[in-house]
Length: 337
Image (cartoon, rainbow, N blue to C red; front, side, top):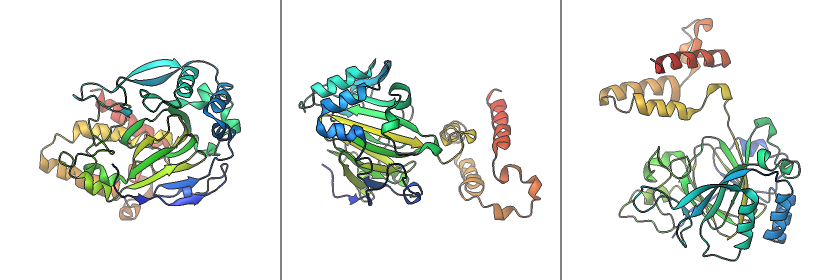
């Protein structure tokens, strides 16, 4: 069971075509109550699952999507099997309309097996949908996806992009933790996981505190929010979030975008490289590199380099596209040796 958690700050109403700087610049999660309540998709969903399925189908142009089908009755976790040698589901490439029809048919079946179609690109599979249902983040060039499922449970994980998740149908519970709680969430394998990002191994609905004692500390820093159709939630970059469908028919649209330009690459690449090149060094060498990272990266301050001629700052100054290309070229040369 979930313990007492702090509620997330709520922003009432709002205009879906003008999210507002206060939201986009927030460093903490925000519930955007009623943000998309006027979307035609939400209005259709409030009538019935059948109505919203038919509404979405009018945009569908065909093509297969990724879907997860549960292997066990009653287990809705997108998770590992008991031996951590596989998962609680099997992946299939199927038509989106078949997933939606199956979810609609099982709308009253709480014991139905897990069914979950994740990260279906809306612009690719549902062209025209965003002309009627959108929140106006085009200047960020967001990745916009549809998530369809029954009472699925996606364990706590983090994403690099900022995220606004919008509930179209059903109810969802979000439990969130700041990035610094990584040690207390018992994150599983980095390179063997159900859906890409590494996930918490803790069952949030039945935590085993003998196996995961530090999870009690994580709960002291947790936030929880339950969203209805028309509500949305802003999840800042790198915040851990556990997402649970509370209804047997759930639809959600999310927007991912990053605050850094694409030419800089992904921080994940630097993290993976550090795992390869730094993690196995002797402790004294790791400590030396930790000091270098703190000085040049995590506590970077241009003012400390005033003794260097401005035209010679190079990568000590702002990294533009030309500098980024040079850095990448040098990195590729070293990796290919």
